[in-house]
Length: 264
Image (tube, rainbow, N blue to C red; front, side):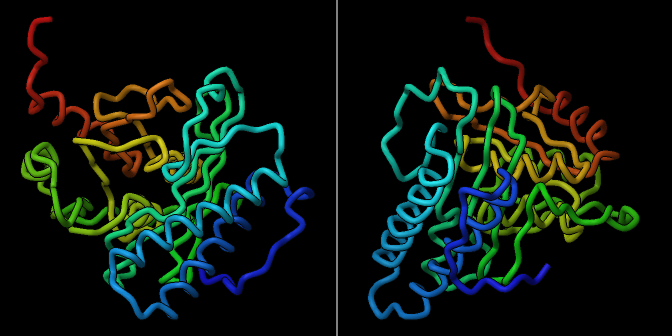
């Protein structure tokens, strides 16, 4: 997908939820590209600037379009009143700050909407790649499964369980940056499995999970239980997004390989 990502502010109040998520993700992504292209300072400061400016834009757009909804953002104070709300936008204005600051392409913008705890609407923009994935325009089904499945993992801290599962099912590991970039590699057919364990929050995977589920992929916790959003504590430490036909063997391998919890 190669949409025009030139910055513009749509009449967001007239858009359906999925179209709103798409429009806001595109606008924030265009802003982040502009900031990065004009930047002459140090990389850490660039990441901070991108996080702050994209967060402000996204929150302004969502509040104007959906004034009765709550917002949970990585970059804003968490208003716990959201816990009693049915509709909560869950956003990561810049997923992959390290990659963004290092002039890599594998960073993303996440705009997700959870209704009654379920990730039902989402848009994941990959602005450096001029692409976006959203629940209102999911990709075609991927091609035939390769002989050796491709598992995307963190390029800096690959979870031990991912290495063990890859060895057990004969998968090749593909290091990559942000959570959104990894999840969308699966949706796009450039990878087959994204397995993460060891620390994520709801904003890291709400929008990617919504897009993956809308496209017919499997998305769950790594014990196979459903992903639940708008929890009091937004920690959501593990995630499996994969092709539907790989879910059973991957979950079975995790069950065999993951240590049993100790006694309480």
